[in-house]
Every structure is written in structure tokens, then in C-alpha cells.
Image (cartoon, rainbow, N blue to C red; front, side, top):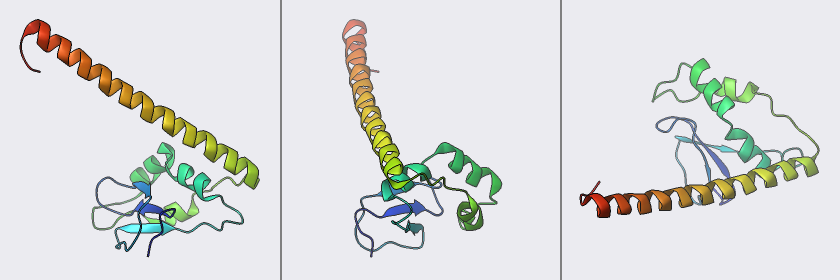
Length: 129
């Protein structure tokens, strides 16, 4: 079974190479559970490392992926993960978590601005967009 703090990797299907967590219970073969050696690799650090666009693009372009085949595990397993000391990994992960919060807030504000803008246009022009 999967725990809430496990990191799951979408092996195949859409979206390709999706990284998620926060799921509990059973999972199927479409997901890979990343199990870091927590003496060497901070779980949050690994989560943020796996989300990098560069790794996603590498897997997408070097692999011969189809919806059925999934990601090529040899490419994923051979991708080097920098291992700074644990306190530095934790600091890096904390900084990325803060950036995620800021990005989420910015997206929420942007949606609010778009709604207000749409409402003003509809009021002034008199038509729905």
C-alpha cells in the first residue's frame, strides 16, 4: 500500500511522467513508488528533483515511449541525482516548497484578475465571453 508521503511517478499514460504524492492506499502498475534511501536522500528533495522539466524532457525525447510501454526505467535509473549533505537537501526542498506556495498564490490571483476582467468586459460590452 501507498502512504501519504510516498512519491509516485506516472509510468505511462497521460500526463507523461507525472510526479504526485499525498495518495494513500493501493496503486496499480501505471504508477511507480519512489523509495529513497532516507539516510542519503531527503524525500522532499527527491520529490522536487523529479519534477524538473529537464528530466521530463529527457525521458520524453530519449525514450521510445508509447502509452503502453511507459517510461524507460534504465534512463530514469541512470539519471544522476546530486547528493549534497542532508541539511542542504532539506534547505533546497524547503525553498522549492516555498516557491510552489508562491506559484499557487500567483495562479489564484491571476484567475481572480481574469474573472474580474471578464466581468467588466461583459458589463461594458453587454455580452458573455
